[in-house]
Image (cartoon, rainbow, N blue to C red):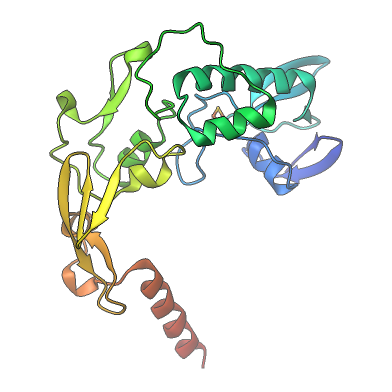
Length: 243
Ligand code: FES
């Protein structure tokens, strides 16, 4: 186990824990954008910067990537940290002026757009890579980034509707700004320029998953239970087993 100090509070956590995870144990809030608990870490947005002191040296590190170390001293709200977050959010305001999530974070840290950068696409994508990681880790890996710099964008191969997309919507669920459009209407789900029929939960009747998703997960249509009903069924069978 490793003991460190965050904002003057001592915390002991298992080796390999990140500063972000240790801070969350103390209910110390650190803003994040590219980080998602269900995905492998990426460390690309740099919003989660904190100041550490180690062997007499102070520096900024990305808390979602930096592993704890014995005796590490961490400060999450110094003026240097606030300045780093303002800088990141200023760039993101330039990149995504229509994003309400970015505007709210920017207002919290007093970040203003720089207004000196190329216009870019002016969409809601902050290039956090969460959607690409979700697709790679939970689905078929059918979307990726193309191009570089300001032209960088997430899309299917050759900019077309991804043939391997199973319509699970994992990419849209993890997107922090709502960039990925997903529409559900009349028992159909539209995403990435494709339409998928939604199958209904056999217990509650709610449309919840695409056939392609079930096939990908190795389930058949006899297993048609939505997450909520599956959990309820599991809890009921557990209770029956205990009696
Ligand atoms: S949340 Fe840590 S770098 Fe993005």
